[in-house]
Length: 222
Image (cartoon, rainbow, N blue to C red; front, side, top):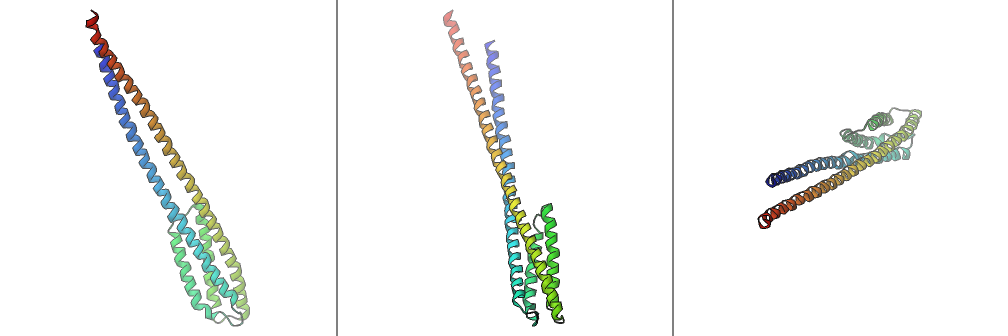
């Protein structure tokens, strides 16, 4: 019956070796999935957060510069001389808004972004009113007053959008850390399983050798 026991050992060893291959393959597939998730996280961090933050900063600079031009001008002389500057400023804003709209927006961010677009449209209308050349001094004063109020709202909206970028970047970082920690845990589990399987296979080998040694001793004992 010892030969039967030997066959069982070989079958067990074969099953364990197959288990090693399965565990290794499964871990490889999981690692690939994790790497894809990390790659997506890094891409999102750059395209949807870092680039967007640069758009927000440029919009802030754009609005700040036009605000400085308006405040430096005299209502009595009008704002016709700023027409070219306003057109350039408007073109830059529209380009930045268009670039921003192509990125991924969270639900909260989308709401705030729509507010910003409405505010920017009001700014465009105010600039048209300031440079139309037929406004009275009182009308220009109202345009300037409206502009100050709308510009303040624009800066608040940009600040809110910037805060969202910071929050989302933190979320992406935390998700990436979870993926990395999960990958480490799986690798450690794989290592533990392989060590256990290796020890079992060694035990089977030693057991098989013991059986062979016993079989050789039997004729001598007789």
